[in-house]
Each structure stands twice: as C-alpha cells, then as structure tokens.
Amino acid sequence: MRRLENQARILAFFVRLKVNKGKDEILPVLWQDNYVSLLPGEKREISAIYRASELGSATASVEVKGWNTE
Image (cartoon, rainbow, N blue to C red; front, side, top):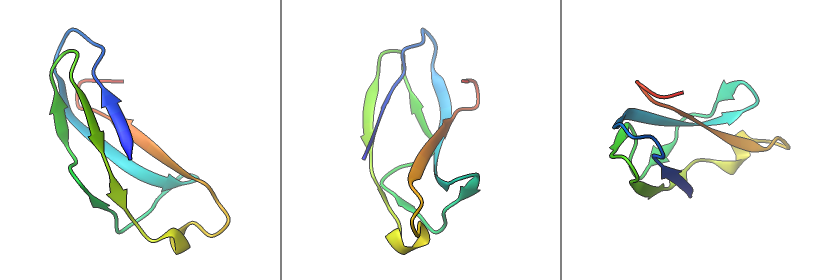
C-alpha cells in the first residue's frame, strides 16, 4: 500500500506509480488505481499486487511521477 498526498497548491495531474526492482519496472502489476489526479491537499492510499518472485533477493521501490509534478 502506498499513500499519496498532493502538498502543492495545484492539481497533481495523471500521477503514475511504478513498482521497480533496481532500474527495471516489475510487470505485471495489478493496481487498485493508477494514473490518478489529486486536488491540492488530497490524500489517497493505493495498493498494488505483483509476484514477489519477480524480486528475487532485491527490494522493491515505488516510483511516483505526474504529468505536471516532480
């Protein structure tokens, strides 16, 4: 589960989450929701399901990027 919060004063548009193993994206991932837009101050929890076997001994990381966000 990942918690997102838009702390900016503008809409966070088309925010996309990716589960990564190092620099590589893990696929397939079944997201509760993805490509979300968050109003200023809005918070949202999003969960993902993927095969843990895809990680091996590595640790997963979540990358968050938006169309108009850093």
